[in-house]
Amino acid sequence: MVASTGSHAAERDARAINARHGDIAPSEIAIGVVMGRTSEFFDFFVYAIASVLVVPALVFPYVDKLTGTLYSFAIFALAFVARPIGSLIFLRLDETLGRGTKLTIALFLLGSSTVAVAFLPGYETIGHSSAVLLAVFRIGQGIALGGSWDGLSSLLALNAPKNRRGWYAMIPQLGAPLGLIVASGLFAYFLVSLSTADFLDWGWRYPFFVAFAINVVALFARLRMVTTPGYAALFESRDLEPSRVVETLRKDWRTIVIGAFAPLASFALFHMVTVFPLSWVVLFTQERAARFLAIEIVGGIVGLFAIIASGLIADRVGRRSLLGFSAAGIAVFSGFAPQLLNGGDMGEIAFMISGFALLGLAFGQSSGAVAANFATARRYTGAALTADLAWLVGAGFAPLVALVLASRFGLVAAGGYLLSGAVCTLAALVINKELGRRIA
Image 1 (cartoon, helix red, strand yellow):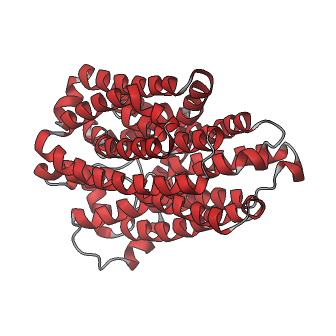
Image 2: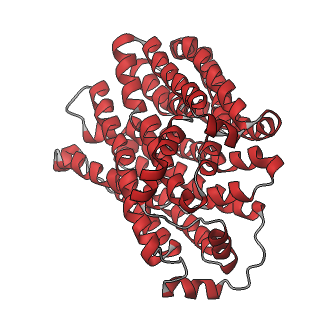
């Protein structure tokens, strides 16, 4: 039998401390969701930006810049490979120790792995061991991200009013542009304020310290929520308790696969307007990285408002319709937009603004295609596994594949990669009629 989240003494004590907590409103759940997702995406973007600006020079100085960036992107992908493993490990801890204890261990592992990167010695100091350590830290981040699933996003979706489901579905996605804006701002500040030598020596390390501090704040905020009696009862009443992974895979494998491919267009575009263009600009143009990070900040703001707009639109036309229309828009975008990165300042701005606007509409509803498609008893575990697979398939190797294609065959090839993601999303929405009915 699956152990209750209240079975562990530490969690009972935490709930006793928070026993005065009253009724739970969707807006209150939303606060915890946004804080948690923003901290996770901030970690993601801090590492992603460093993988372009720092890792090639620090860890792979013995190869050319393009090869060093490709090596860096290969290590970048390790977190997405490790994430499902983390889910398997921490879902077991959830069963035995409780959600609060599991979340504490996962977020401390995430914070420790992140801050460890800040102390990474370079190749000039320890040779190839630098790359090995970076890979270990990245795997630690991935395992921790798999374990940081707290069920709050699913809880939010299930408690949203029926006529506002699109609005509440977009709330978790707000963490992505918020994390990007803060991470890009930090790196841009240090790039402008420091010499290149000082930035590569010590300046780049500070955003990782900030990431650790944000993780600590997010940890206590999320623990304050998941350990209260009201939340515990709400999780249990909604059957948001961990189920056996083998049983979930056996009964819901089709839902997990379709749920992973449904948001593929938005996940492919996610990297095409964040990590990949930064690498292209740094490697193949004369533009300063700080200036392009400023463009990314503007793009992030556009994306933020587009995500909000996606909630309003989805409640009028349906989430499935919006996902389909946005995937078609991404397909059109893939045919011409990537070439704008070679179009000078105005081309880059046009690419980023239009890309983030389209990303916000698509990504804003991508989480709505997951939780409601599972049987209630397996929703918690099924949603976690689906999210892991979606990020692995849609995002893990995206910067590496896009940069390989673009460097060998031109930016049009990167557009072809983006088109493949749009085709997969449209196919998933067409094939799975059950998915279409449930998220419409």
